[in-house]
Image (cartoon, rainbow, N blue to C red; front, side, top):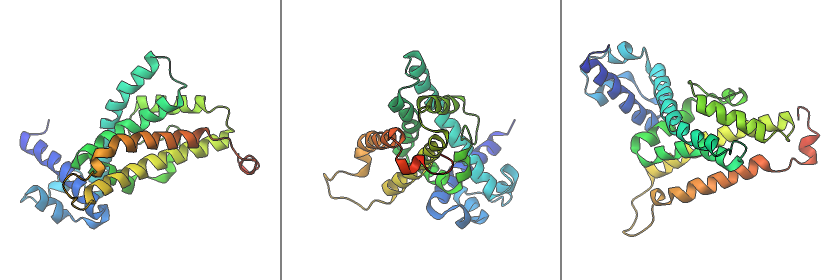
Length: 224
């Protein structure tokens, strides 16, 4: 078990690393900057706890995915309990809503912005697409495949890959927009105040894209 001081240093690196990576990019942050951010005189702290900067970024993403999975599990339980496993909007919400919660805090937004940087696009073509143990996420992906079974397999695979990319990129962009929005006049509506509209409209667009009838050109494409 880690000593309290070691545990605190590790948590500080995870938090400050996420904030620095979000602002400057993973490749744009040095070990010295990380140690300065946590007020550590021990310049080997990063190596001791994570090995290197890239492994720290990976640990941030895994921790983020674990938190998302906890939130998603509650939604999946409701979907199962209500017999809505083929309700496309409910399934898309189960993917998006747990991510939307991170828009409410600076650290949550940093996590969303880091995921954009380090999430390999090739994962979108794996079933299920994930980087950590996520049984609730696996269930949602499985139900999506079943719900969209009328689509040709190739088309379905491309649409679910696009769904993953849209979720990651649009939440990352929204997080950046909130973080970098200029000061607004008193009484003006900020991006923070329209998160419900952002989420519901995003779900509308994602559902529409998934259930759109394939064109003749798409159906005639190799691999469809």
